[in-house]
Image 1 (cartoon, rainbow, N blue to C red):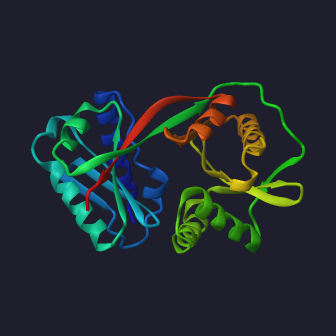
Image 2 (tube, rainbow, N blue to C red):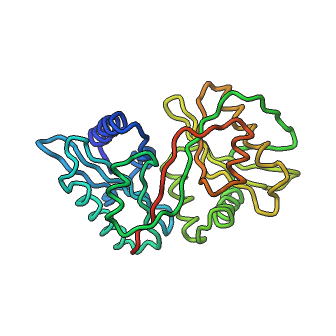
Image 3 (cartoon, rainbow, N blue to C red):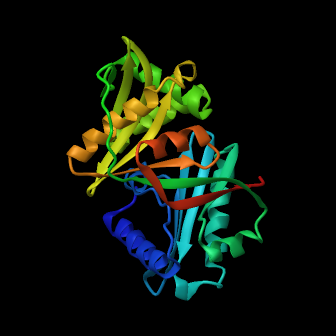
Length: 275
């Protein structure tokens, strides 16, 4: 469990690194704020009592993403190599199937570092922000809070079918989100049946949409676009700026988001570490 002091130190270092590099680091602060007690997921390096290096591990079922940073004035001293070694050792102890190293697409220092790591490029991910666009609500599409046991089961199956999780992984992730993250969880209903789901995290004037998926047999019918439009309108009326993420290879999702007014503003590259 991270302290408020540690969280503030990470945030301060992030701001320095982003300002110097002109990129955005994906440090998943909602996950950092909800670390389990005695977890070994975060690694720190201090010089004279000052945080100058950090690596976070983010577990999603049988996959872990590693993302970190080193203060610009303390680079080329082996600090990040030490942090990464610790993160990789812990990931191997957890026996994860996939280790992904996350780096901002525009970070040249990250690209140079990764040349010396046994990894291969896996996928790019876009961060997208909604720009004011006229959206049409469809009363036939219902977006409601997830509250029942049946809703939870549907969410688990949607994660299995939509994101490739094993069922036990999806159940564990679902439990952790319900207990720790404080996100709003929504079910999409059409004609009296569950069609999909999504989560919304509201924080500091921003609303982030996660876990958005529709059952495979119901795709291509406009359900996703109409449900997303309804949630975007709802969050916009609350005064939030609205964001989401999508993998570059998911052309269908990318086209859907763009049609609803989302535009890319940052991208992250993921490299699969050769275990």
